[in-house]
Length: 223
Image (cartoon, rainbow, N blue to C red):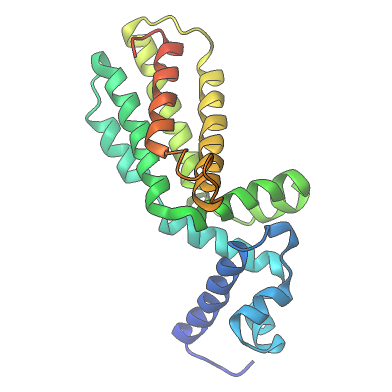
């Protein structure tokens, strides 16, 4: 490969990753092939393979790009930094409202890629794990940070307010994760499936508000 500048190299790889993103908004990741990305870039087969040795290397960089461009760490930290343990119900509502805003901000294309990633983990877990293991600590999903930070907050308020949750904090966190993915799917479906009984029915702000109420009740509070 002829010597090129670092900027040129990065730009070419970005063009390939951007093409991969567009392809992955149209079809499940498990069915995407390198030829799909090559066709999307408009580059020759040889050019693409100069910058990426295989499809999963492209997908790894796609995941990193998505995660880096859509972090929620600062927003969550801001909510938790002003949280008052005796007003914890308000904080739960704020956390869920932030997640609703996040879904609307990133849009359905990115959420579809997220759903397709979940499908890959279900249909080909070994391949999904192989891609995930290539990620550095700071390159992982922002939702992992949100999960850890939220769990820490819930344990703190249970202890300080002497709450008696209906179930364990671990199970409440699992409940929140499962509902997050359900809300994501419902929102994408309602935005993309243009039929009267579905279109516009699943609004993130409404679904996350209901999630907040459920979590508060599970913790032993008043929603």
